Image 1 (cartoon, helix red, strand yellow):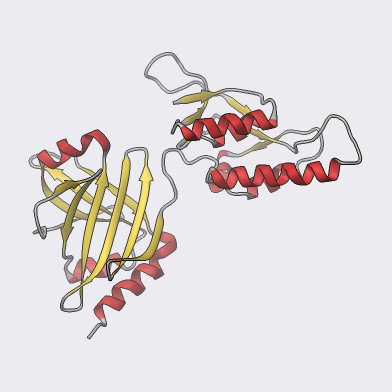
Image 2 (cartoon, rainbow, N blue to C red; image 1 turned 45 degrees about the vertical axis):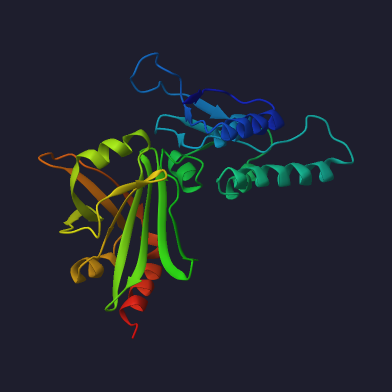
Length: 278
């Protein structure tokens, strides 16, 4: 984790440092290290620091952090300022998009009055994907491979990456494969898990039987099952979908949830497509 507590600096250097941070897969946090295992102390990130912060894979900021944005400008003026301004605008916008931050952030920067600094609320920074607090945006889509069309949902978080792959099955049903990359915990989960659930919002729906024993394939722990009609019904209106691996005799579990709020119509349409096949 790279902690940032800075009033800013050079624009280009801020983006170059952000690029280096991203290449190395480093996470960033606004604050000062407390020197122990407690939470970091509150910090500030103004001006070019915001661009450096954007380079983090996971980007953390609590409600006490202060993010400051302003319009970038040259200290001296010349007849070429318009051209330079267009180049700078394009460079910042392109950089933010590559880092997974909404380009609307640049628009907000440009709207700040000359010579002024504007604080960006953490809630707004989260809405612009500048702050993600260890949860990246979900990805849903219809894909195809080797003649099979399937629905895939995927979301990466601080705790690992979860995927759900939904395919059409016989008798107008569906089949679900859950894939979970928990890093170094994969082997432990495989060894200890004895019960499995489909996660729908805050519910854990027991899965009586898996299609086959869970296994590790590449970086992912995988499990495949056929949901019953009740599960299929719940899936179509779910705000979150995921999978749980449960050790015997323990209230703890491993697993993931994928945000499905923006793609409920896609999920519903694919399931209904599978159910309506002749």
